[in-house]
Length: 137
Image 1 (cartoon, rainbow, N blue to C red):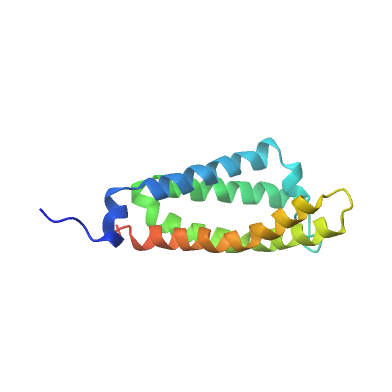
Image 2 (tube, rainbow, N blue to C red; image 1 turned 45 degrees about the horizontal axis):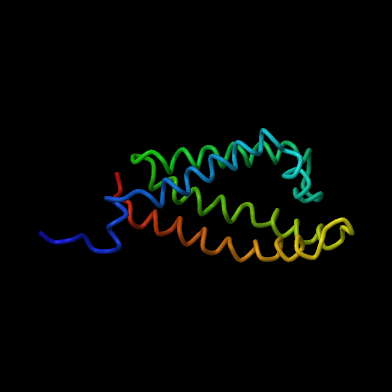
């Protein structure tokens, strides 16, 4: 009996997709349960209410999370996750900009905001791995 190639092991073991999907579902729920922190990082330059963007990104995270959990939609969910992670990057950059101007933010909080930016790269990479290792349906 042969073992599957490493790049195909995800097909038999969906743990990565489940972890990412569950994380996105949790964050999506937070957008509705505690929206204020998310409102504060929405760039002011965007038209309309920050709350609308908070709720819209929460809906996106819930949708992408659900797509990742279902085997039949996992592949499209992985591509949607890549788009989502790229799409929220401006909010994360804005958070750094705002927090460096806010005297109430500690140095640790400011450094944490900066450290969060490069974390988008492994999240995008992980979503791409899920995409590549899931068989087309």
